[in-house]
Length: 323
Image (cartoon, rainbow, N blue to C red; front, side, top):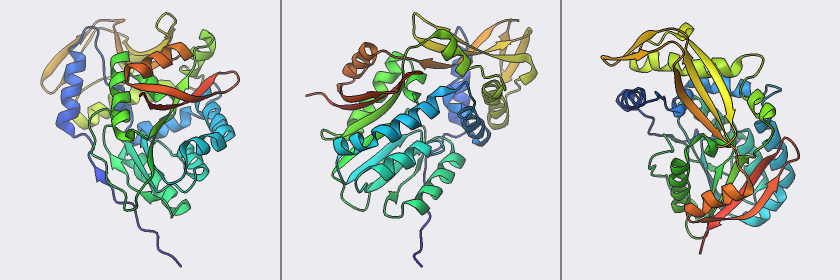
């Protein structure tokens, strides 16, 4: 009987001082904002997993089906012996398809801010894929992260960024993140990116306003997490979830709206909210072929292969460094 060792965790999870500084900076903006990366504590990750199973939320099931369909093409393009680095690994459902479909992947390094989700995912993957070295990193992938080196030599690096997570960032933040991926992949590597494509407003808005209210609970959990981790005193009963598709900007804008005039305290600071005041908590950008190609080009990358699902349209794009 072979022994499967527990993956060695590199723990760079943001601490209280970092989270507090981010919250204070966001609440000092006009309009107020909170960083969406702090959605993903253990409960937030579990709620998001529930969101992905809601009938209105098409991105996850559509991307999974597309990935399964085109995996042979992806494997041929990537080649054997790759190290896979994933930004924001979540539950690992898509990762499993990727690692099983690639030819002899050497190592897998997920970078995930939720320690609970990260450990649960890599523990399962280590049992199913004992030949792949697991090198998990608990960190905020939006900042510089030093990656552990695999024990075996790898022929290339594939950065995996599914789930349309790139759309959660502003244009400048997305370019910065893609540039970081370009550095990670090196001159001979690639990045496989999931992108949600521009489509009918009703379809998009329904995905972020599910009838069961799971997305609303997920959004409000951000405030509960901050109350616990930084000692703020947000009253969850005084905020409501709102998500609307802004067509000219091709993005869902998710906000928490104050239902009354109130004051919130964070680290000794007072923040006044007017009744009806909206606090921005997440963007979810959608793309066309032209807009995504331009974004990639700004980061020194070019779109090689690309695959689209039938309606509701979702895309996978394989990026390479431009010459």
